[in-house]
Length: 338
Image 1 (tube, one colour):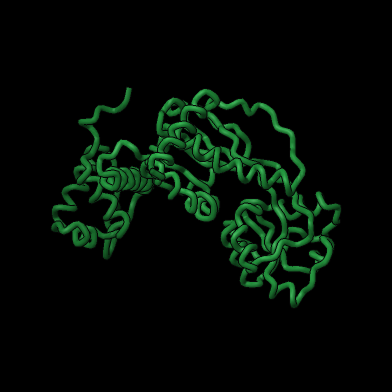
Image 2 (tube, rainbow, N blue to C red):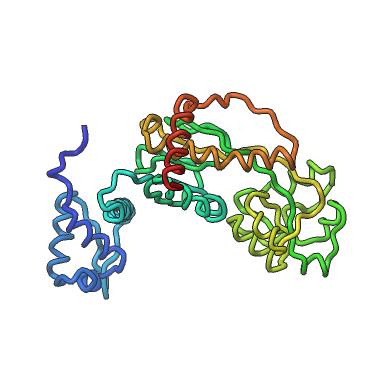
């Protein structure tokens, strides 16, 4: 059984505590909150009395958090951050019941998903809110309805719906290639390899797949998102190893050139992950049906550019719902066309 709510500090007291901890000053906290210094001091004293522990030590020119205060400060900041996010989401939705909250990978969202969302919206799909998450998380601790995940189809208390594999290839700008011609995969050993911090082994894996023994596959400028490596390649900083579906526009515009005819299918895939409690939600099912239709194009392109890896266990919990949702989406589209 949890702690009785009557024993918890009030929201006003926690806001005062967080501000004082952030500034290391009751006076500055009071200025931010438009309160008097004595009011802030009183609220913090009430928190300390409720917890029966000191949260601050008074020092010359201000206050510093005690060890217990630092731990409570971190927890308080997280609570206030989540409350702020939820409050903003409630205001932004204006009471609408057709709102989806998605956890997404940043480059996947900006380069592939967001450009397609107007179509979903035009079909009466509702409002889609996006927030970045790079690693799996506990759905029950968030308000997310669905997540886009790259990796294995294993997520506690959730169902993973296969979208498509990742086919990667080296790309470089015409300018870079003008100064450093690259004709064969082994020529990349004298190129600057743009590294992705979240995929440290990707260059080594690619060289192994194409049969090249590269002495230093981990050397090169380090970036933490595919979007950064793409821009770095466009700026002629080196050669990027990227999923082809993320750079179609840059290749079509002549900003990037795909090197060699050696695309490699990655070891993992992209999945739409639905928490168990949302698997029968009509709006979630409708979005998933639409998302799978969009993903089918990438799957077709992957089959044309790289050998198909065998996968099993893809039986979808959407099998019975997709036909209904497709009919609904098609009907919406036809209605708008009329």
